[in-house]
Length: 227
Image 1 (cartoon, one colour):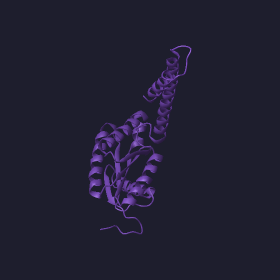
Image 2 (cartoon, helix red, strand yellow; image 1 turned 90 degrees about the vertical axis):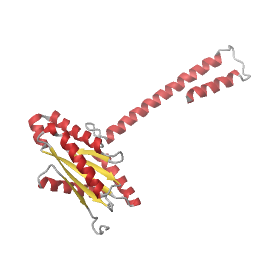
Image 3 (cartoon, one colour; image 1 turned 90 degrees about the horizontal axis):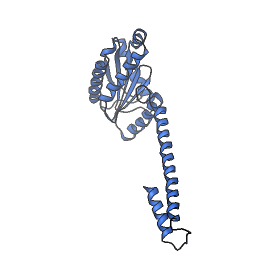
Image 4 (cartoon, rainbow, N blue to C red; image 1 turned 135 degrees about the vertical axis):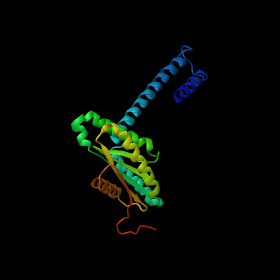
């Protein structure tokens, strides 16, 4: 539209100017040539933008599940942690590890294993809020950031998510999921520290029988948890 408007103005200025042309159609031919050039530039620009967006998508998302990859998730976690600390908002971090996933790959093949990972990712997308940030960290590990959420709400969402994942994995026995959720009323300065706390809770679930979810408030070392 901008290109067409520019050409119309250009042609109009030439037609109504006192400039003499050897033929009356020359201004219109000039306008057509300029419009073709502008359209080519627009097309090339759009194509470059599309390629850049695709490169960004590939650099920040897991190709199998379309969730964020580890690097993008850690960057998002740092940004969300800074925002939560600035405004005094609570924050929760969830860590998921699939149980018996290697056994599924060994007995039914990696294609079936990939199907299980996709099923888990789909279940996550169906349950989570638009503001939640989900990622596949690698292998059979997933993680989620719950911004601005208190412990009761985090528990409710996590239990709903555990049920959705359990249902999604019904066709991928013997795989189940262990979930650990660390809730912070005062976010730590380092997001990696909060992710590690959620990971630790997840391993407690594995040690106590697997296929469950553990939600717990975590206090930053050196600070008292507010009442």
